[in-house]
Amino acid sequence: MEIQLQELINQIKNDGVAAAETEAKSIVDAARSDADRLVADAQAQADKILANAKLENERMVKSSEEAIRQAGRNLLISFRESVARELKSIVSENVNAVYSSESLAQLVINVVECWASKPDAEEITVIMNSDDLSALEGTLLTALKDKMSKGITLKASDSFDGGFRIAVNDSGAYYDYSADAVVDMMSNYLSPKVVELLKEAE
Image (tube, rainbow, N blue to C red):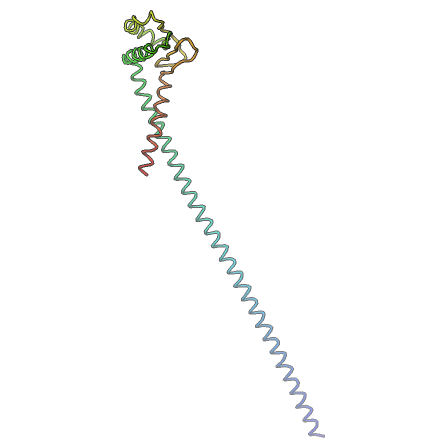
């Protein structure tokens, strides 16, 4: 009886230990599985954060490069516009200097003689502002007296400052040699040349 009781105790002890070992193994396996899942999740999250950071860095670098390129373009455009303004100012000073001197009379005479030589130009009107006409009328009349009888007339108009205009055959149209028109024409001609020189210097 005593032997059977001991065997029963041993059996219960063995079964308890086995059950405890099984439970412990199950707990360890579950913990290991949870730990592996947590590590995998953490790695996936870290990879995602790293990938996002890389994309954001690439976006910022690209954006910065584009901003630098745009700033460079803006600076170049601003510089070219500044050069064009300065060029126009220089041209304007020189044109106004010529148009405010005795050279204007000779210029008008040369242009009128050129137009008068055309067979289809029967009537030529020279239009100047009142001040220039008053100052140069005597010189012009003397120089052009032979042609005045052939339909060349002088006329005052204060619709422009310096220079002159030529109207041919009373058509209502005129050829504009006013200071503003000549400055614009020369500036428009010179500006592309300057831009080309600037491009060559880049």
